[in-house]
Amino acid sequence: MRVVVIGAGMAGLTAARLIGAGGHDVTVLDKGRRPGGRMATRQLDGGASADHGAQFFTVRTEEFAAVVAGWLADGTVREWCRGFSSDDGHPRFAAAHGMAELAARMCVGLDVRASVHVDSVRSAGRRWMVSWPATPRGPGGAIEADIVVLTPPIPQSAALVAGVVALPEWNYEPMISLLVALDDRPAVSHPGGIQFDDDPTWSWIGDNVAKGVSALPAVTLHTRADVAVARWDEDDEVLREDLLLAAAPWLGAAKIIDVHMHRWRYATPVGSHPARCLSKADGRLVFAGDAFGGPRIEGAFLSGRAAAAAVLHAGETS
Image 1 (cartoon, rainbow, N blue to C red):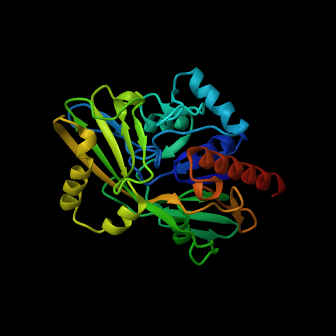
Image 2: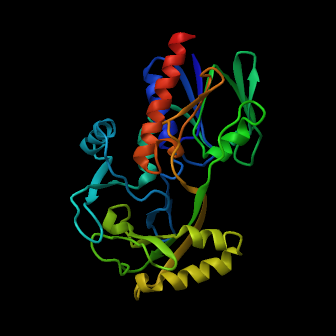
Image 3: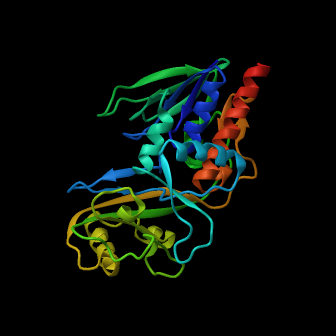
């Protein structure tokens, strides 16, 4: 059975690995330059690195715990801390060399094609034709599949299958990420992360050295959702300067070496679908992602696992 998975984030890579282990031919297509989705790490001028999407993950289920145990054993991830403002005894895990490296580890043995901007999924009899246009990063193309697993945010997946099947409308909160490389450590106390409930600008600030991601000082700052909504369409330069002013108390006296800003339009789904994945077209289209499993790395994993189970079941009954 030929399966195409759209999206190389946690849900898509989890689904692809399990479907492939079930003996099926799997190809993963992702629009990013590197796989990972919000498991993203950026290299900054001066040699620093910074996670600019997902910052850490937790474990609440036996299914995810079994996978994380393997990552811990081979050094892919490490326990960062057990709380930020206080020790609550619940481990927070970080990828040893940045979240993008966790995605890279999950890609091993898979056919993953980056910089592929899929623009449609269309019926081709009992199969599907998945197509994409040429871009400056690569040629256009198409691939046929018996089953397609779609893991982008629901509005993006809905656009790909418009006129084929309908998906529920779903809201997402945006976020703007600011990465700042410094010549000295930021003013972020141990263990290197701050989660805010009442700051006027920020929801999160993280020290990438303390987390073990970077050998050189670099701080990651995430805006509140309402700040991102209000300032989404502003000029990059104006917004960057304003965010740097808001970040100043945590940058301390360090000199700024480099700054990068990234807008995440679909950072966090508002609520979760009651099912961990959604099957359509007699099980030949399967939708997954953190809107189904829950707005966390673990939620995306659980959704990808459910999507794989749905695909394998469809393969057995077809």
